[in-house]
Amino acid sequence: MKNKIHKRLKTPRVAKSFSILMEEGNHNMNLDLFLKDIRLSIMPIGGESDHVPDFSVELHSRKIDESRVIAILESLTRRYQQNWYSQPPLEKLLSEAVEAIVLELVWEGRSVHKIFWDKRDNGVYRLHEFAYQWLFRVFGRYIRILPHTHWHPDDKIYDVITEKDIWDIVMPKKLGGYQGHRAMLKKLIRFPDLVPSFLAQKINPHEWPTNFNTKHYAQETKLFIARATEQWGWNQRDYNSENWNEFYGMYRSITLKWAQACLREHIIKELNQLFLYLQIDAEIVVKGLPTSWEILRIRKQMCEGKISFIKAFEKCLV
Image (cartoon, rainbow, N blue to C red; front, top):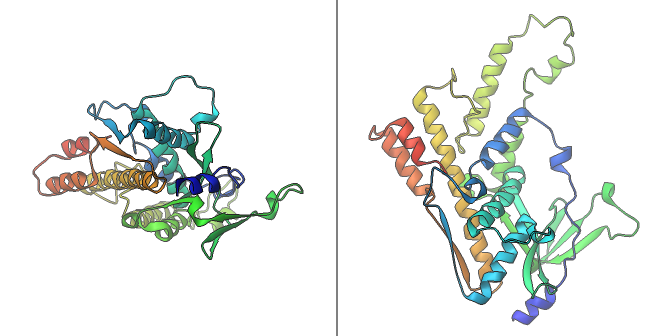
């Protein structure tokens, strides 16, 4: 079985990622701030944190499988492509790997990697990131057709990849799943930042329109974004909002920490399942960070008045 997997995954057969959404997408302040805030503090920065001094990562594996796990994590951070002579601590390596996956998930709702066997480096597995746009699943295979803007006379315009060669991770259902997350992102860019598009085209550079209530527009837009991101608890970086009181503002902030914990746990679970699929006898165990159920318990205690707002928030920090 293992030899068959090695034979099938020995070389990456797909092109590297081509930029589509990240460079050509709509640049909107609400969208940009949301994506940055979700990625912030998913894991301790650099694998260290003053808020969680007991943070640690344990790798339960055989000695022979430890290097295989490290190789997969390094491929997610692209460390193996750089001439770095020292291997970082496992806490830092895992933090960087999770953050790399989060970048794709929060922007696209999905992160797709090609699995291949690197026979040049002791036969370890690596993950090769590539864009999933125009990727279709047909009869147990994936077919990716390159957009015409990326066609080259010397390259194929399509790739055929077996389903078993793909590691496909999507946004967890409790955070909306792939479809729900994409729908939410579209809501974030539905309205411009300052004034609606129909008015922006008519604005005189020397005179602001007097027949349009800008303050009311901004307030209604803020409420719309708040409803769209309610599941995530994003507060739009507005801690003195006129639209909610101090309690609800803190409630949303803790809900955001819960959503980040859910995303972190989902990614680590998917990594462990990947090890199992590749017949790597290993499991990553993270300790010291607040879990999603612990954060919900803290939020409930805050709602019942058993703990102060500040204390509750501090217990959820990473």
